[in-house]
Structures are given as structure tokens and as C-alpha cells.
Image (cartoon, rainbow, N blue to C red):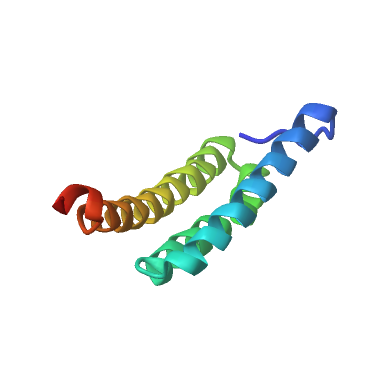
Length: 101
């Protein structure tokens, strides 16, 4: 579960999360195949973050489980995003003149 002490490791971790989320959201916006589903699961993941902190004040295990949902839902969003990217790349590769000779 995330600690509440603000050290350089936590700042670096949060910066990495923000940069990664911004980049992947930018990519999702332009691929447009699973954009709705990607942003839905990202929103659900983000929606679990604050409740995990609030619940952890009263029950650390429940807070940990809710925080785990952040990661599970975020990973589902990433799978959807990268499936749409690989599908598009396969389509471009198969339709290229290199393959068709």
C-alpha cells in the first residue's frame, strides 16, 4: 500500500505514473480502436485510488485490496490499448507491398 511519507522515491514513482499515463492516453486517443474501453478502465482505476487511502485509515487490508484494484484495472486498460496497437500494426504489415510482392 502506498506510504504517506513524501520522499524522493515516492515523488519519482508518482512522476513516472503521471508521465506514463499521459503518454498512453495520448497514444489511445490516436489509435481510436479501444479508446472508450481504455479510458473507462483507466477511470475506474483512478476511481479506486482515493477510496483505497480512505479505507486504509480504518482497515489496512481492505485498503490494500482496493489499491490492488488500481493496478488490476490499469493493467486491463493497458492490455486493451496494446491489443489495438498490435492489431493495427499487423494490418499495416499485412497490407504492405513488401509482403504482397
